[in-house]
Image 1: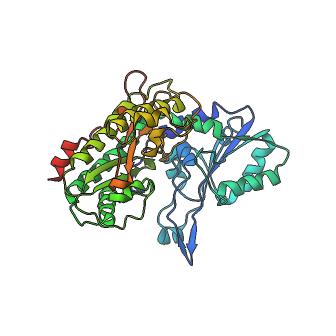
Image 2: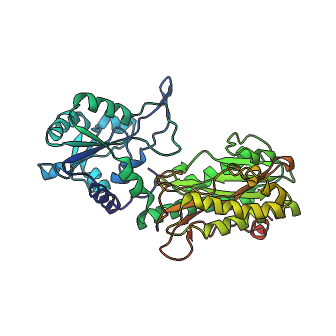
Image 3: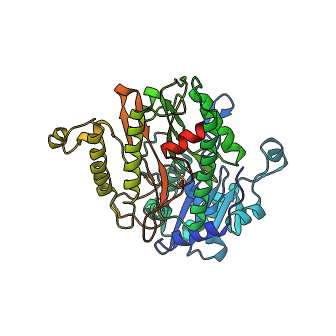
Length: 429
């Protein structure tokens, strides 16, 4: 891995929080992700399942974590099962975790090789009454592929049908949504790398550059700063393309007079950043572009102040919609009459701002969080309002990542990334 080692005490702390929420005489199992095939002998790069990483720091394929706080043997309260390394694997794939490295990474003393899993797991299941299984229950998930976790759950229920099966998600969603100080520091590192990429692009962009060339500048700066790469597929959308919310082709030439919307974030140690900035291809905004840009910036700043403990996500979005409505009226994009006659289920502002303002951030770009429950301190949210005007070939979205504080306004992890019109124009000269 490119990132520097993470203090194992973070993972020790995370496991203690999880087992404290488990029912008596229960065990829980977390599996690594698969390595997904493409065709022939090609595979996608391995990306660790964030739950097992959150609890162990293990960033390696074919790994299994078992937690059983009431195990008869103390050494079986925490167990890692790893793929056994050997000289052949070391030559062809590189170094893998051995028992000593696994302990240093995770703080887990008991490490077995994967070939021993069935035997050891049987002995544990004889003692346990309940089994927590780990399913993907994120509110935006739409996964059709059967995962390694799915196959384990299916096999476990066949082999041990008399056990009581419980869901780990209600526990881990709440835990992962509230960040430890070490996690906030890692998120800050990801944001700092994103800042370096953005500043590089400000000096690079000029008329007739291609969107994919800008993308290449970002990934160059990210990798040279030990990033895992992009936290998500980057959006480099010039002119009309900015009106396509998930435009990822990044294959068009940037024309003088257009604005480029860049929704890009670096990942560091699997922790994501999520930034959106808009810059003029020519280095200077037109008056109309500046007016729309500053309207979005005002909405972003006002929305961020609403991120305080106790805020309800749904109510927050209603209030942001009201703020946006006033700006759109000032821009003469909608009228007061449009607002008076709007459909309550699709307010007038939705014509030009049709997506949500915020989502949880963390190990996933759209991180775990229960949206029906009040916001709490040390949750991390994006704030990303936008105004999209296809008839003007203009789309503006601005986005920063914020940590909710116990009191006062949230802390902006991206406060040093240029966002004011004057700063962007000055840096592009």
